[in-house]
Length: 432
Image (cartoon, rainbow, N blue to C red):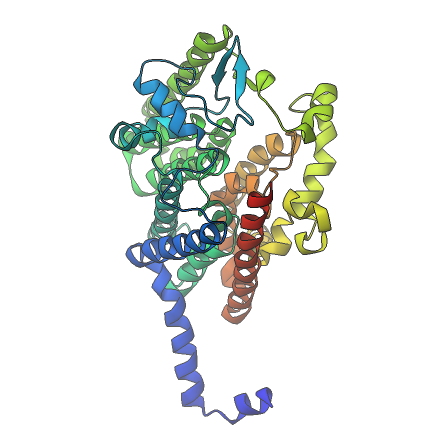
């Protein structure tokens, strides 16, 4: 019956339908519409979930630890001045509580804590960051096309932005606040800023601001500096001049300077807290009982965790995992449009660009695979957000080789997965 109805449509009617379909995606190509639309959807999801749990998005989450660190920094100390009701994952050292997470999100939140106090809603803060991320993704794809890195139509760019907003783990992190999710979204913000600086700017300014953004990413989540492989290669090729190699070396040094300062700053931060430049407090954190046996035997990073993490991040389908629902889920089964990245890898040109994107992904994935725990509690492989910028760019390289209808269908499947998954996660966070 449906096929018969389609067959009876005139060519003009089919063309109108196609134009409507295209216009629907094109809405998300504009950052000034995609960012607020994503924020509204995220906020509505959060409002519905928190209201069902008799809570409010206007209050701080149960584990708004960056609020407490921001408060401590405002009072000139590195240990928490006020002890949160929940101490899960905090580091207890010499009778004082610290965060093992890097401090950049707390530094950004300091003005808000100074104005609104410790009860400032990290949920609203995270919602705003998530909305900005979506808008910046639209800007990044536009700039990549403008500078001939990608060849995408307006509708294809909009499709990818909508997919990123609602069909990846980004949507599951946006509505809840919480120290883990806030840190990841702030780290993603700095990552996308690094790529934007490299693509959009030129000369010393491009190098320096790319380095600043990567330093910000490193000060949020240390491994994020590894996604800087592609921006570094891109900048070198864009500015290469065999007659002015010393200028290229000088620009590279300008980019490296903020990253070196960030590493040094983290070392000093660790020394002032724990008396060791390399000690970030992980050894003292109050971990869940779920991880204690593995930690005592294998530590935080070990090859032992690779098969477990690989299964939950690339193979498992969460809706069939029963009690293990919140351990993760396959990146490609939940977001099948990412499969276009393989087309990009095979067919994409120039080869240096696709290779650099691949190395940005693989190098960032290594510590994720070696890490104790899969990212629990979560829906989908939330740690893979760390390399989603290069992965999405590689996907964008491969997307023109697919029909728009196939891309659209896979984007819709991805969004359905993660919309349901976000509600499941809300239930899981309440139960945990």
